[in-house]
Image (cartoon, rainbow, N blue to C red; front, side, top):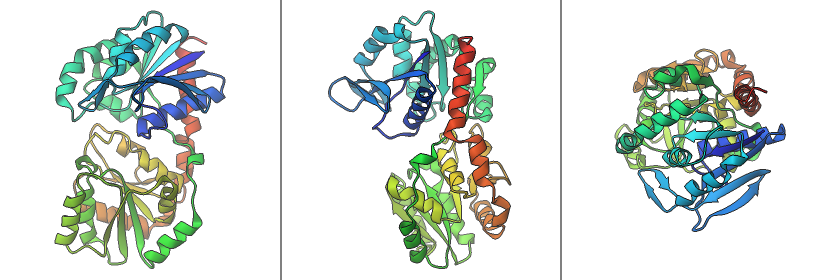
Length: 370
């Protein structure tokens, strides 16, 4: 069996979808399934390379529009190589991959769509792209969604529910290493404090302003540490100053991957305050689960975030945009930490990378009747 993943980018470029593509490709390869990836690279020329056994066709981008790349070589390369593969696994949203598949000689190929999220913000792009997307949804043999919630509430998928297969994202524990010296340093820096950790790009849909405001309702021995950079940083700093929360909320900026695991390990609870379905799944919750850290997140309509975080099992799910509810949930978890002693077990059974790979291989075998 030979599988070609159509991805927007690929490692060494770092991104959420790219990591999923890599984990599935490498995991399937270890099970004897030949996996390759077609992706746009960040170079001025197209080239091929092998990474951890996965063959990658890297295509140069001609130009960039509304978060989407246009690459003539991507379209040409797919047409040249498609005959060699049994399954085309296309990761969306990615208008370029969709267009390339439309112009390829795709007949007799099994097509799996991996629906990572709807196009939410780029409304003009979506209007142009919609006919092509509908063609692909009709043509697909199966559609993977990362949670049942997303498949249920997505307007784009409503007519194709019979094709949907639920395969949650999984992460690989081997990619996360704790440095006990860093953990010790964090505990010393915030000595005697209950640490609430949060992480993500500082953008509107992440809802960090509500987490900052929640500090008004927290005891003085609680501290919120927010990792990440982004366009909302100045707004958050002004909010912290306005409410005189300098001793309760710290913006840490970018945290290197080598240090990230240590921040999870040092925390008492993790908070994902996202407010819109642009946050389709919340992989960062899995990272907290891996370290047996319970999570407070929001019940976002049409998003899988609240489904991933099982209420009263792996954490607490609250309504978005309510700082007091966030604070109340954070206090409940910290005061009853023993209730969430099995968070890592919940992770291992549901969100380990091996679970994702096994479910994906099962789907591959189903659609080609092995």
